[in-house]
Amino acid sequence: MQPIDWHFPRTGLASDYLEKLFDQGIARLAFFGRRRIGKTEFLQRDLLPAAEAKGVVPLYCSFWENKDQPHLAFARALQAAMPESRWKPKLRLGFSAGLDLSAEVERADRPQAAPPDQLTAVAGLFDAWVRHLGGRGALIVLDEIQHLATSAQFATFAASLRTLLDTAPSTMRVVFTGSSLADLQRLFEDQRAPFFNFATVLDFPPLERPFVEHLVAIHRHITGLACDGDALWALFERVGRNAQLVTGLVERMVLLATDDWRLVWAQIEESLVGQDGWCERLWAGLALSDKAVYLRLLEGRDLFSEESLAIYSRLGFSRGVAQQALRRLVNRSLLYRQGHGEYLRVMPLLDEWLKGRGLNSESLPA
Image (tube, rainbow, N blue to C red; front, side, top):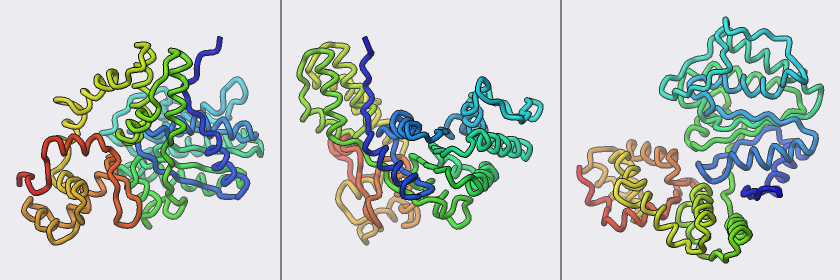
């Protein structure tokens, strides 16, 4: 008996992206998608397998695999794409050069620049992989690419990577993804950045109602019970379309063999909105300017009206600091920039928590 696959396939979306890349000749795509909306699962379970089915050789690398030395994450991905049983590159990567691909420790607070000898070794690995392709088409997926914009220590590797991709064969396509819009924009839109104008940043589409129906069908198949799809969809919207959270809810319902989603959700909700829960910890960790800007949006106010600027002044910060706060809120996936100067809140659950405590911008202590 085959185990039930909880993955929600997005084959149409994968086909659309592959058509743009390989049929319409678009060499590079960059996507922003906030965390826990199913982006990485789509890449690994839908896009890359669909590319492989077309005869395209896939290469996946997440730069969060080694946050301190992202060039080593790329080197590891290249080596994994050339297993020794099939082909061994004529490239010596001895540990004497300091290129230890077995290290998995992530120390994001200690970014390290790639030494010249390691950059040379990575470039050699990339060239070996290109030869390994033998003229076949390839799709490189670089996940969490925005990490390269988070430290000046990564600048030399970012420039080297840009050069490698610039000089790659015309049969190669690249997909960049990231979960920080501000960092992605800094990487691709800053004229001083190595990847300036290398790709246009697009929004990755969140999961829609069919994803919820998929979970309802799995629950019914396993338990024989009917789950309320409308209620589950409303909850999915309420938690900002957090796929991980709602999948976890349905998994608990399956384990308990119940269709009472409210009972199970009450247990999860307590960890989110209860004392010392997610909302309380999140709010406590925000800067005063972040709180003021978020509350002004929640209240439906113009962020830079005279009234708002007066509140910021009373709290001890300027218009420029408020603009920085806005970018931080986007980076933390609490806001979504829909258009120029237009921002949407993405977590109704947090809004409910704030309103329930009577918090507002005018009552913030200076």
